[in-house]
Amino acid sequence: MASDHSSTATMTAVTAADRGIAPDGAARALGRPAARPAALLPFPATDPQARPVAPPAQFARPRPRHWALLASLLLLVVLPAALWGGYLWTRASDQYVSTVGFSVRKEESPPAMDMFGSILGGGFAGTASDTDILYEFLGSSDLVQRVDRALDLRAMFSRPWPHDFLFAFDPSGTIEDLTDYWRRQLRIYYDDSAGIITLRVSAFTPQDAQTLARTVFAESEQVVNALSEQARRDATRHAGAELEKTRVLLTEARQAMTAFRMRTRILDPAADLGAHMTVTTALQAQLAEAQVTLDTLRRNAPAGDNRITQAELRIESLHNRIEQERGKFSASTPEGDSYAQLIAEYERLKVDLEFAEGAYQAARIAHETALQGAQRQSRYLAAHIAPTLAERSLLPSRPWLLVLGAGGLFLLWSIGALVCYSQRDRR
Image 1 (cartoon, rainbow, N blue to C red):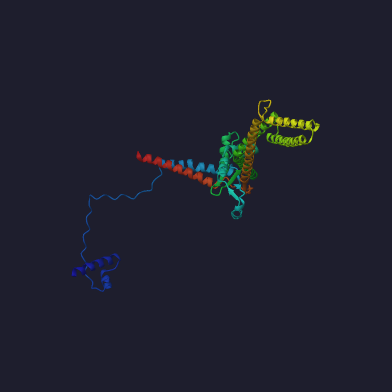
Image 2 (cartoon, rainbow, N blue to C red):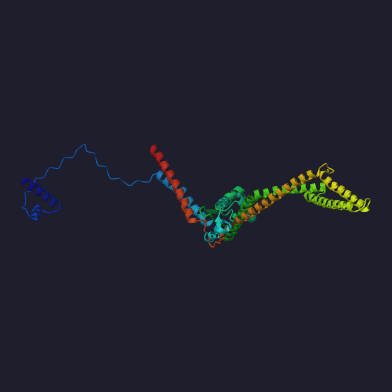
């Protein structure tokens, strides 16, 4: 217990000595009697084998490789970035943007029972497939050639050449070069879910940009009209072919009937037969009446009466006439055809003609129905954003291009510096 008090007093004395307080004062501060001063322990001797302490580091001096690294930074990053910025602000020409938005629409005439639904839901439908075709057409060389013929794209895009040789078009370029440059100047935004296309056309004057946007819209409209016409032809092609086929059959059937009538000189053998039957029937009635008259005369008139002779002659004439009329049915024509054969041939030609006429009428109805259906599905190009006229230039975006160029140069320089230092460390 006494040792604990002595150690506590010793620690308090040492702490007080470190703080500049006398041991007695420290003991009084703790409310304890002052202890005797402890014996000082000897300071350990220095170990002769201990590592000597290094002197403090001095400031590093730049070496030649450091100056080379700084020179490469200035030469490969700062100087090109400064030249790039100078080109952007002194030589790059302002470009103006015109915006136009449109979509391919298809007008459909709904049936009468769907009229209420069309009033609520609208009678227009978009065609995604046609919009996809139009999207591919906008970046094609076909459109570039059409616009070049209409507006002289080479002269329009090469106005600042050769002052601005980076952003302007080289007039000596080929159609492939012009197509690549056109894809740079035309930005296409396609919403495939709604079938809406938005174009941003850039040129070196606001008027040129708006003219380009109008021309592109007009050419796109022609393409859509051509697609609509092609769809109409495809829809009516089968019906038209069937109509032409039935027309040929009807013409052949009518020609065959006409040839038969010209050959036989009979317009309608059935009607002609009916007329002959009527004549024969009338002759038979007259013959019966003449026979009755002859029988009456023979009973009442004396023999050798002139009236009996006339009645007999009349009966004989009626018999001969009836035989002649009956002989026509079995007689042959100059071509060797009997009347029965003529009637059979006529009936066959008549059936063929009626069938051809019915087929032709059905084909006409089908063709007209196909035409009406194609007209109800006509396509057209609807612009929801008319070509705009820019009031200030939006391109080129000089600050962004400068930051992008300087950042790219610095990134390449950093990679090169790291590669060089890694090779140096390996050596």
